[in-house]
Length: 308
Ligand code: CP
Image 1 (cartoon, rainbow, N blue to C red):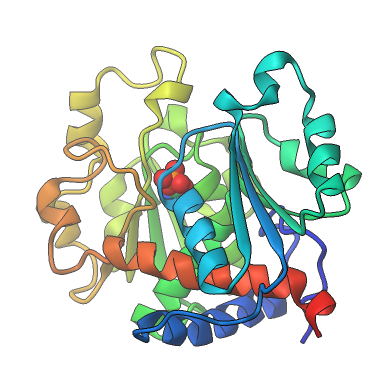
Image 2 (cartoon, protein in one colour; image 1 turned 180 degrees about the vertical axis):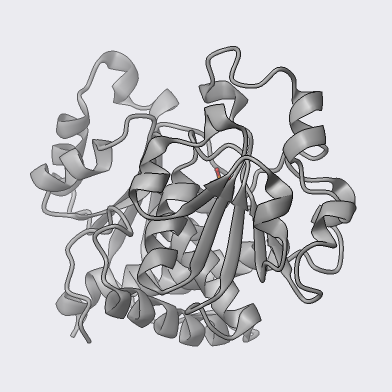
């Protein structure tokens, strides 16, 4: 095994070999999830804490379930009801968790780089569960897992990522992960929502979504993050949907067996129509299940040395 990291902070920092190792292990974890009794001893005696300064349904719940299925002790700190409200700093919160013997801190924070800062100051492993507009590495890994499972490969796969790229940490994690795995990646969206760093990283970009979708194996929609936007980045939600949203007609441009992905939560009727989201090419529900398997694999890899 080559995966020797203390923390998982980004996909930019992982090699293709490390990503492959996570995805291969997640295949085994998925077999466990398919059994009637979902139980392994891998996190026995381990304390796993979710520390979320932003809302979440999928990420937090799947880490908590993954911990329980692997026999670990799962605890949650919601910043809104913790001592953060009394002015406690992030590093003091981290130190407190360390002194309680926490093995892994899973952290979501509105500021890019906050999990990396915490990781430098605590003994516990830190998993970035989404930091500002930077990365969401476990979402990127579950997306890669789903593409590989459904399409049989990542190398050479034609992937179109549509919409609000600017504000999307999911887009950045997918960009790094897919580039390393040799996929052919095109981003499409309004000029105001495609950051220059995408071109600088060597990815294709276009403002015409039809160009990106044509002959794609995978079409991924991103959530329009209205809460992170200043006004004026696109004229109206209605116009965004008309020009850039994924609907049945646009999807016909992709390969016949193309899959449709969305990290959730979805704005139905904005970046994706309900007809497509609930249609036969959608793998959005499977992404959620695969998120559990991938997070079980990551928890195992970050704690394995102490177990063996
Ligand atoms: N995709 C994702 O991160 O969803 P949550 O915000 O519900 O965790």
